Length: 399
Ligand SMILES: Cc1ncc(COP(=O)(O)O)c(C=O)c1O
Image 1 (cartoon, rainbow, N blue to C red):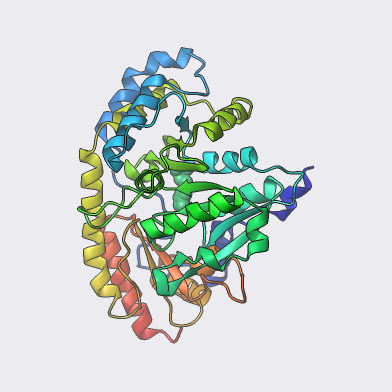
Image 2 (spheres, rainbow, N blue to C red):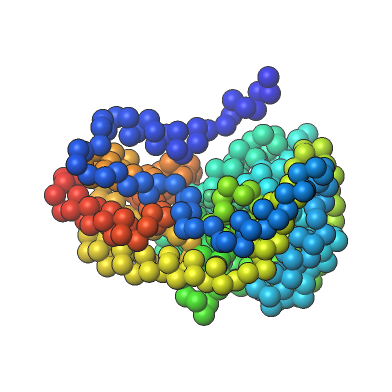
């Protein structure tokens, strides 16, 4: 067996199941509300469903790994509209992916030389695929703790020189999971300068880019930042995006990678063997989704409505900032995050994710400790009810 499998950590939801088993049954008479997993629950757009129905003849075709040219063109055009950049070359700078998760994982296998002493830098807390991808590629993860004084952004300049020298890949997540923080142009400028100095590749996870709270202020993207800074070839930069959150279709498994053509050529080679060609049905549905913005705007309106309703209730009892983007709240808990989540489940029937399960102890602390992640994915009325139960729990419990 591959011994690197033994280096993988249990997934946060496995830890959550074990924690909640300790809490015993949920209280009787209270409908359970699950706000732990970031699985969109708003309806999938009708245009996606219709495109799948119309693409049924595609079932008799083996798709190519490089993907349907119409889809690559639709993605390039979307990137141009969304980020006010010239459309990336659909032939060389865009590849479809089966959601961003598999692409983030596979990209690390492409970039890392397993025979070298390689480091992969990732934010902390983080999406656990970054770490698993690094470990299975034979690299050592290095965690950069989120700084609460900087909206939970990472202080890249705190990474020591000897780590940078071995760094081959840096994962960034903007908007961030769990805190919804967005990297500024200055953050990007610093990271690009470090990449130029040390030669590492940047994997920019942007799967929450379309879920933002200020309709007039969409989050800056990695490719957009590169262009603004005159890096027109996107050297050493690849952005990962997805329809899962944007269009409420996590079951479609559709996303893309875009950026540095030289990296994507090698990634395409890897993917040919990896076997990650997109079904023609999914490709047709994805073209329809990327070409439609009305459902995305409505999606944001529904999330905004939930933040507006829930935050005033929670802010009376918890320190919980309004995020710039994503559908998460990253709330401070009075005392231990695990005890809070366990108590909330057992006494109020609400499931949330302890922050410490999303992070690793690093630099003398676990930066997720003392926080919980609340995913506002349930319908509005349920989110409001959950907020009221959380407030009651805080007011009446000794946790
Ligand atoms: C930060 C982050 N990146 C990537 C993903 C993967 O999403 P998908 O594979 O559906 O695009 C998720 C899913 O929750 C996520 O939270």
